[in-house]
Structure formats: structure tokens, C-alpha cells
Amino acid sequence: MKNIEKALVTQVANILFVETSEIEVETPLHVLGVDSMGMVGILVFIETEYGIDLMSSDLQLSDIESISALVRTIKRRQGK
Amino acid sequence: MKNMFYLTGLDWMVHAMDYSARKNTKTGISSQIVLEFEGVLDELLFKESLQRFALAFPILNGKVSRNGLLEPYWAIPRRSKPPTLRVEVYHLAEEEISHTLETCVNKPFRHAREYVVFHLLYPSTKRCLLAMTFDHRLLDAHGAEQFMLLFCQYASGSIELDKIDYTPPVRRPGLFSQWKKAFNGINCIIHTIHKNVIGSNMVRLTGKKSSLQNEGDFIHLCLNERDSKNVLKRANREAGYLMFMPYALSIACSAFGELAVHRNMTGSFFIPCTTDLRSRDVSWKQMFFNYCSLFFFKVDSESTKNRSLLIQSLKEQFFQQTKEGFPHHLAHFFSLMRYIPIRIFGWMNSKNQASFSFASLGESLLEEQMLFDVKISNVSHFPLIPPHVGIGFFFTSFEGKINIGISFRKGLLSKEEKEIIQNALLKF
Image (cartoon, rainbow over all chains, first blue to last red; front, side):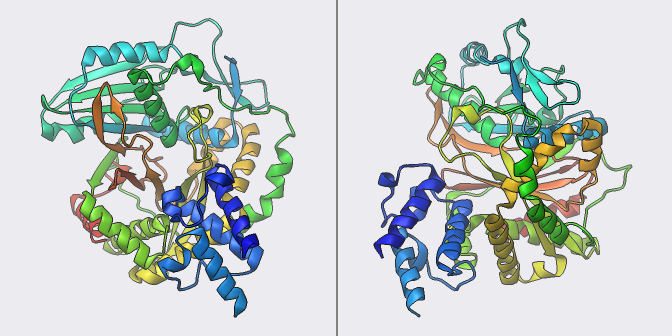
């Protein structure tokens, strides 16, 4: 779980050009400054790294709105 | 300050578009950013500060040059007059604002080395507007916002120009330095172009030559905060979290689809969609020149009638092209085009089959900014569309309000068609 979180924090920090220490995992991504381009970048990363396609899934806002929500969703999908 | 900056492939693409636009319309690829203020700017104070500000940017005196057949570069004369920025002032009625702004952006620059002109509009004693017309060869939309942001900060005394570095990043001249990168992405480019551009019956709005004029025309829709919130909620619901760009594109496709139906045209829409390759934080080094690449979207005209299918298709294309790194590959590929003479590249560019162009610029950099203690209340963009494309849709946002701009060649749309497009856009 921690590894996925760490990887996502690094990815979001890269997208936003900020330090990983500036990324709060519970903060909604739009508050962090992620836009459509950034969001697709995150979803591409998840598909490439974990083989999970979240772009075409029927997800609720609570499944993807923060890094911790994304981590939970990835774990849930991996468990299936 | 360096005296020459090699152009990137993206810069050269804009030069080529500018060249063919200039041939057809006498005006190049210019655009206008319009700032509305809650109060009135002091005309004299503004003019004096602006002239002092301009002195810091000798780049404004430059022009494109080339060493024989090698790469083109932006050359700044070693000995030239200090740069100046022209300001035109208008005292006018409220109802004359739109027409005046339109006239300003359509007016060609006075000479070959004029790239930025300001227009101060005073419709009343309580508010004013400031329009900056700029040449896209030197500034793109984001760069123009950065230029204005820097001026606001300079005018407020919060930034000293000699303490910041606005020298554009080093662009390597070497003949072969970018070739490897350019060839690496060639499969991705061929695949995307083949899929989205070649061999399809593209819907394009062409007006009668006699009715088309060499000027741009604009429709500007500014949603209030409540309507903007509703649009964002619908975007979240219908396209997904943080999927405003594909949602806005679906709105543009639907509006364009209604025009196509009105003209009994069927086929596919090919949409080049601008994306900014800059880092997210404001870097003054990336203020001048061009940093925008493209996504290529293709939509079947029939699919515009089914919103959820349309959004799904746009999201899939967005995802796939991001995954393949298409905008970056395209930027590297364009670097090869720098060896092609401008006349040939301009001609190649004018043959593209785009149905309309699209950009979603996101939140303005000028939010919460003041100029001489006067609050900026809105910012909108009025770009001139290349004549061979004809029409474009632009979404921007300012402090929670969505601005939608439709830019088209004068004479392309009838009065009835303008209403069709406005109503279609406001339906969402």
C-alpha cells in the first residue's frame, strides 16, 4: 500500500513540478493543482504500472479524487 | 542578454502559419488578451510605466533570421533603439466595446518589428478595459498572460526586473541534436495522423469566397459563477473528475455538429487541440516564444448526437495520445521542419484539413491580480484563427467564471448560424 502511495506521490509531484513533501495524500487533486492533462497523466501511469484502466471505468468521485482514494481503488482492483 | 535564440519546431510551425495567414489576410497569427478592470486606470501612469517596463525586453526589437540553410533563429540587433510599446486610447460607449476590440485585433502591426500593442478602452468613469494585441511568433496565450502578470507585479513594486531571469531556455543549434528524438516518435505521429487525418471525409466550413473577408470575427460568452458551477458539476458527472477539457471539447463538437446539420454536411470532424508543454509553475524563462503542441481528435459527425458516446470517444483518444506521448513527439518532429523554407512549410500547413481548432486554457494566471491598485475582474482571449481553418473554440476560466470564445473568419457564419452556435454552447 505504502509503495503505491509513494509512487503516486512522486508521479503527482512530477506532473506539478513540486517537491514530494508538498503533496498531501488526502487533499483533492484539483486543490493540489492537477488539471485534465495532469489527471490523464496519472491515469496513464496507473495503467502502465499496475495494468488497471481507470479511464474507461465507471468510477465515483470518491474513488479517484485524492491520492489516498486512488491507492484504495488500485488495491481493490488488484484484489479482484 | 543573448542576441540570438534558435527557434524550436513549435516556433517554426507558428512562423509558417503566420506566413500563410499574412499572404491571405495581410494580418499574421495574432491574438488579443483583454483585461477588464473594476475601476479606471490612470492613462499617463500606465503609459509611463509600460515604457519603462519595455526597456527590459530588447527581444521585442528582434526578428527571425537564418544562417544559410541552417536553423532559423530570433535575432536581436546589437545596436537598436530601446523597445517601445504603442498604446492606443479609446473613449467610447459600452455598446462599442466589442466592435472596437474586434477592430484592434484585426489591425495589422505598423511595421515588421512591432509585436505587441496595447489598447486602453474607457467606456465609463467607473471601469475600463486593457487589450494587448500580440504576435504569436513571440508570445503564445500563456506567455501573454505571463507578460501581463509580470507587468502587474512590476507596477506594484513587488518584483524588480533586474532580479529575474527571463532569458528563454537554451535552444541548441546543432544540425543533428534533435533528429534522434524526432525520429523516435515518428511511428506514433504516422499512426495518429493516419488514424485521424488521412483518408477521411472531413467536414469543413467553407464560405463563399465573395462573402469571406480578411478579418476575424468573435462571439464571446461569459458565464456567471452560478452557471459556471453548474457546467463544472455536469462535467464531473458526465465526463468524470478533472475531465473538463474533453467535456468542453464535446460541447464544441456538438455546437459544430449543429452547424454541420444546418449545412447538410456529414463526415468526420478533425480537431487540432492545443496543449501547453510548459511546467505548471510560472517560469519567466518560458514567457517568450511558443510552448504549445497539439492533440489530434477525430469525431464522426453522427456521434455528436450522443453525448455520452462522444465524451467516451474523446476521453479514449485523449488517454491514448497522452500514453503515446503524441504532443511531445509532434513537437520534436516539428523541429525537423525548421530546415524547410518558410514558403514550402507555410504551403504545407495551409493544406491541413482541420474542421475547427480548440483550446482549453484553464485558470488564468491573472486571478486575484491588481494593476495600479485596480482589481482585474475578468480576462478573455480573442485569437485570430488561421484562414485555412476558419473557426475555433476557446475555453478559459477566471475566478470561477467560464469564458467561451468563438473566433471565426468574417463572413464564414450567417446571422442565423451565429445564433445556432451560441444556443448550442449555452445549452450545456
